[in-house]
Amino acid sequence: MTHPFEIGLETSLPAGPEQVWEAIATGPGIDSWFMGRNQVEPHEGGTAAMETGGRRAEALITAYEPAKRFATRTPTSEDGRFMAFEYLIEGREGGSTVLRVVHSGMLGDDWQDEYDALRRGWPFHLGTLHEYLTYFPGRTAVPVFAAAPTALAPQEIRAALARGLSIPAPVAVGARAQAGPAGLPPLDGEVTRADDERFEVRTADGIYTFHQGPGIALMFHHLFGPGTDGAEGAWQRWLAALLT
Image (cartoon, rainbow, N blue to C red; front, side):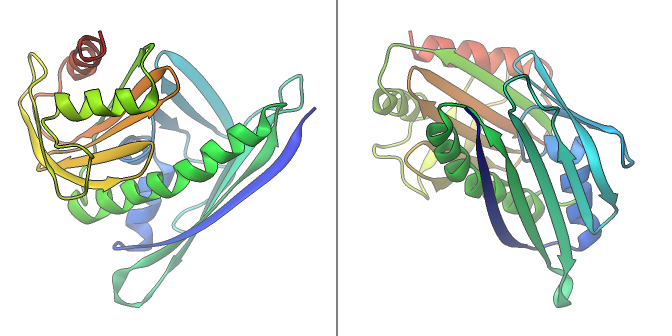
């Protein structure tokens, strides 16, 4: 049985409507704060696609009004599930913008767990968008995704991530983070946001997100600097070795 849901959020962003549009309605822009590698056909009726961990998901663009409104909807599956996303942009005085996001659709039998995960995740994603527009305006990132299954409990995963980044436990905003995945420039930054499931580290050239869940560790990074060749493989190896 499917269950309808809707999540609505609003955030103020330190950028004009055109900059926000580039961030939420173009492939390179979405790559710089959200998940996966993204492609967007710039017209209503086009396709918006996201590839994460070798899996590709596509959605129909149902609204395309530059600097005003962008909306997509995934196909309806055989069991009636689908997801729809709507972004509404409103410019404000002083060069800021209010972004309203509505995520709706139909979820499956385990809808409560899915809904809770979405409800908790969206504020963090919008926080990353704010970080992107504040600290990396006009730049685009190379997205990095890594995942490692593990028998460790979520809090054990978090403790391992903290050790691997030389962060004192418990992870707290303001803590320094350092790591050196083989073949990449060293990571040297600061924890800028943290909740019970994930934390974010910002450096001069990147935004790094580390997420622990039941039986799995995930990373969603956005790299703005040089030396990104092979970054996804290097972080995947780093994560797997950390949890072995």
